[in-house]
Image (cartoon, rainbow, N blue to C red; front, top):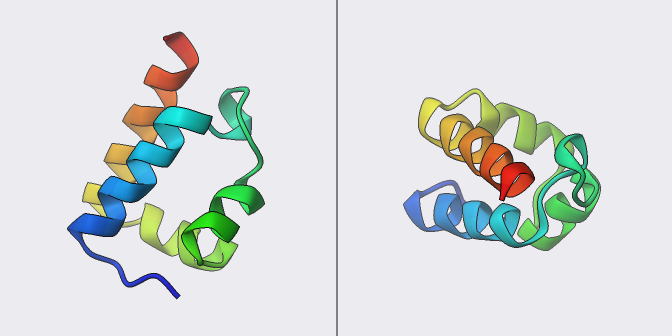
Length: 66
């Protein structure tokens, strides 16, 4: 299981940059979670962290528009 830290945040952001997520026309959340080695409940818990949540939301928007 992935351990939450700055390195995993960057890895997640990079992955979302390359692949997007379904709510913005990219891949499914389960695919993201499988690659990161986390469950969906962990993803949603991490999204509550301001640093992680903001970084992922920003990256998803950028992935959609460009």
